[in-house]
Length: 488
Image 1 (cartoon, rainbow, N blue to C red):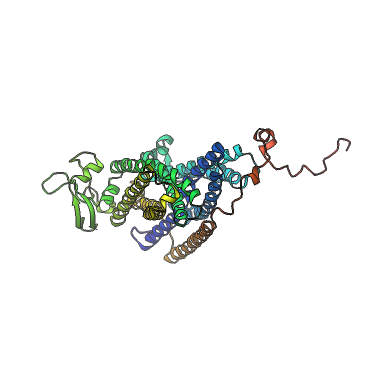
Image 2 (image 1 turned 90 degrees about the horizontal axis):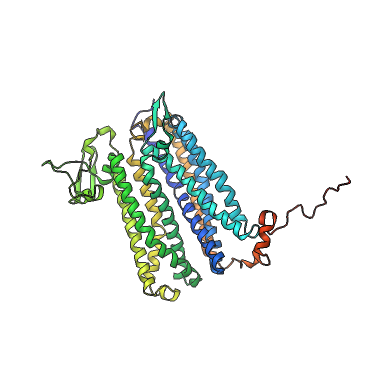
């Protein structure tokens, strides 16, 4: 029998937290970058500007490395479900089996097929077909993320099911899939992937401009990304605010942990509307030992009113309250990064409006280029901290309000837990180190080794290509082999 708050439960939680934290480093960039690669390729085909082709092929290399790391770390997560959370996997099978099956079809069949065409199809299929393949990589990766968020959001707000005979049996598939948390949770995550990809491309471009390596080329990349970020960064802040209000309604314990909000009402009976800028939470004592507070801000953030009631920890039994330290400070890190990235986008667009967005002018503003370069790291941290808020805020439930975490943990010895934990740590670090080694190699090499597109597409008429079987440029391998004669 597994005991709640025991060492095996803690080790299982830490192990899975490590696995998911390392996996989520890679997959969001794959989703966001696939769409940016599509738009770069579209710009090249529409304008005929060779610079877009070079930029596309350069960033595609980063995409490929990232995709490989995402696949490798994703396999360990699938293993961890069965190894670390066997009872949970069995209980949610009637729902998860279908949802993760759809995700597998999307990722390993739909996405994998088109990513092969995207990566290896240059010069072998028509330009239009290659663009179509890139579009489908973006679409399939987004659909894959959607199914993952369906599953995770359902764990936050398990609609459309009943727990019967130890199994979560679906009573309404529509409510289970389009559950309360999914409505804002998926857009919040998807926009985060686009923001991450934009800032990573902007960061790499700013670094090349700082180093005066192909500065004009990477200025062409930096200009539209900074403009796009002026739209994406405030959009993400708005979606995040809407998601926070949804959490306040559906997971009030999680919201209370995020805000370090222990007391719903003040001693005089009035609503406690104070927002904790920083605090020293004490969960056992049920209060903050120290806090810097701003009156009415919590109410404005969560209810959009001056004196609205925001449910505090004191409205729930002690054994149903999550830990506060990690959600409280992780949430502030995520929000702080979001506003900092918005500031960088404003800064860049002010320079653009003033006509400073040429390579020569940008090098006169090195602190802006350094800020953009550093900003490439920040969305990763925002996604990390946001995911920690989401997962730790749900505790002590693995399925909120229906199945406690200790009930879903496999009955393993401490030795077995440690062996798996150490094994996962080593594997994930090897993948991480290998990916960053190849990232640095690609960036050091730059775009100088990328040949002109004519070397692949020269001499091919697009209309003629489209009429060929498969639309390709390469003759089929059987073209020069002896064929069977009719007299045989």
